[in-house]
Image (spheres, rainbow, N blue to C red):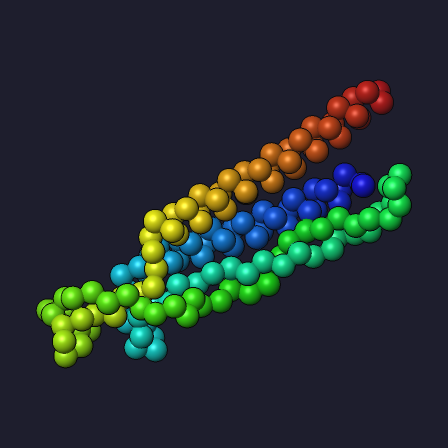
Length: 141
């Protein structure tokens, strides 16, 4: 497999993990947003990833292809809103309950940490490939 293909595969993963981090940050920032432009509480969003072939190559076992990843979609979580008793809130219903976003902040923090770790792993892979190329060029001198 050409090293540039491996770098491309890791670079696609960097983009995907960045999107996951951005969505998690948005979810956390809106965890208390009880009214959006549509008049409804914020709905948690989630990133849907898709495997994407990058470039076919031949190795000693035959033909293969490198697989990268892309953001296929960002979808809204349709789980029900949480309800919190807060009768003084301007968005409270007749019973005193407020519909709160379906965001679980600890879960978002775990998702963000996982995305950050995956981002770092792919960055490490790119740096390792770069170092390998650099050492090969030094040997060729």
